[in-house]
Amino acid sequence: MTGKDLYITVAQMGFARTLEENEPYFYRAANLSLARIARRFPVIAHYALPDVDGSKTAHFDIAALTEDFAGFPREPVFRDGAPLIEGRDFRIEGGCVFLARGLAGSFTVRYIHRPREITPDTPDETVDLPPYAESLLPPLCASYLWLDDRGELATHYLALYRTEAEELASTLNRHGGAALSFRNGWDKG
Image 1 (cartoon, rainbow, N blue to C red):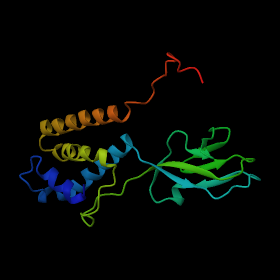
Image 2 (image 1 turned 180 degrees about the vertical axis):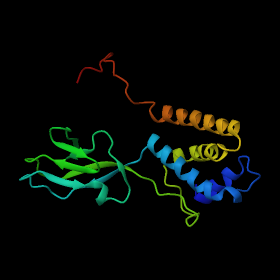
Image 3 (image 1 turned 45 degrees about the vertical axis):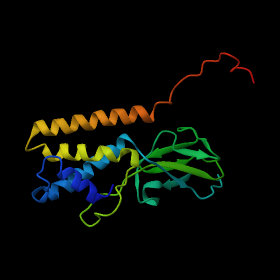
Image 4 (image 1 turned 135 degrees about the vertical axis):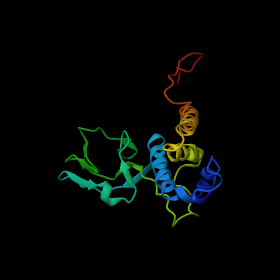
């Protein structure tokens, strides 16, 4: 979905096929929607740190080193594929990671990707969301646009967004958090 596709789809959601009067509000609503969906369904990016010698505490401002930093997920720092322990191996302050003295080697920092904004200048760019979450944009954007003029329509589109977001979250998390029951030989190596 491109910004132009989103614009056309939202225009068809009760605006008599045009958003000319609401165009400035459309971009504000689209970016609010984009940010909200990105918080709910974050994309995790990775930043490889330069080799650390461990002789002193190492400091890396991930927010300054990346153009798309939005925050840190759980377990943000890894060495050789294994997560490090916050408070023991590293600490976080704002957008910065501090590695404890004595830790050496190559590290990877995971961070939450901030999506590119939708603007009138970039109508043909693909919306910066995973494809599975793109369908959430039109109803949420329409709910923001209708908020002042027709509250019942805004409520309808917000409810539609929430239902679709819950269904998507359920689908994405379907296999997470289940405990294995060791029966029928599963517990034998």
